[in-house]
Length: 328
Image (tube, rainbow, N blue to C red; front, side):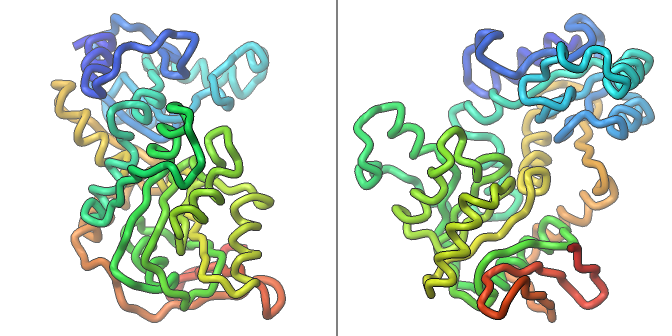
């Protein structure tokens, strides 16, 4: 199969019509649409290590979710004479690699594939709460109603604590450190998940806080953070005695296992011998993560926290078991 045939099948799988080139970041980053594909690597980012690994395993087509050229739209004008760009471009060309970005189609289909993958990999499908009533947001405009219905995901989970939630995600995502804001012993039942850059508001930086209020969210699980928006909101709420918390997974980690699930789904339609999902630093952890995904919702174990700031501060680094290293 050619690169073009595979891309066409993937887009068809999303249920979307092809987007105008000027309206999407999903495009061929380098290489040829007519190249015969020997193997596919799907990844969070097409870093130098991923490119080298792809060549090592015999793949010549990389499907990346995030940019290759260090900016959101993969613009190259500003970097065309930069030595980092030139060396990376040379590596790609010498490796005979074609790179295609798969971002907007993944998020804008009938169902956001990242959240769909999150539900499947973490076993939270049954806890998902569909946002049907948007009147509480005071929105009359159709596009705004659609925004709130598709903004992140809300879950009603079995009662646990913020500490218990940390243990759960630390095990599932095989994370060394989890950052939280809030009391580790706080009660948690209603959770919002904003993977990747969703916690920045998707163009409306106040959106995560509005959702947290309107949906009566106890804890928001997020990828990226801006310290003066959601982080500050949750910290102040905690200092005022409210039952609010935040768990920061990071952009890459919050979408990693969801991405693996998507790879399984889309890999089946490509007709290739194998489709690999590579992440720097966790190449050897994927099989472990899949095994852990079969465990119970909560995992008991002795953990430790280190409080940040004064005794009234709400922020903690979650360091994990005694042998783990606290990242400062």
